[in-house]
Picture (cartoon, helix red, strand yellow):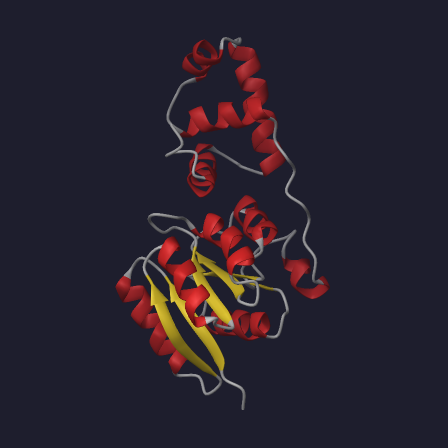
Length: 213
């Protein structure tokens, strides 16, 4: 039996140890390396050439989205399975567009992650069963919609919103009217399918906007 070589990347050691016990408990899998941040995850993948890397989306030094993008260049033979507690549509689209082949939710049954690892090792896309449409059909049909692009001004407005600025403060900073701010915010959120400020903050964190100052 061919054994799937796995690297686990999560900044919480307790979580990593739990995942290691789960993965090593499978006859067809073996954990060959661990990482506590995005940069170390990339280094482990380059050195160890695992079949699959399970990558936490929220990690220090480099988040899972940026690490996924780099991994597809630095270790193209390694399949990326993103693991997170967020089931936001924007997160799913961004990670898949970046090159992840699997997407698992931490709150789901452990069998979901195992399914994702096995599918990824076989070159097949797998999305957690708890994900809601439009992503539920993706697992069956093997494709995903492209995340709509937002304009530079929409990005600026959403970034400032995530940083806690009011519409009036954003208008003053960008030298535009409050109504224009509201329009850019609404358009950007609609394009990215963000439903409220919490979603905006999560998306901004994923993109690295909160440290890009």
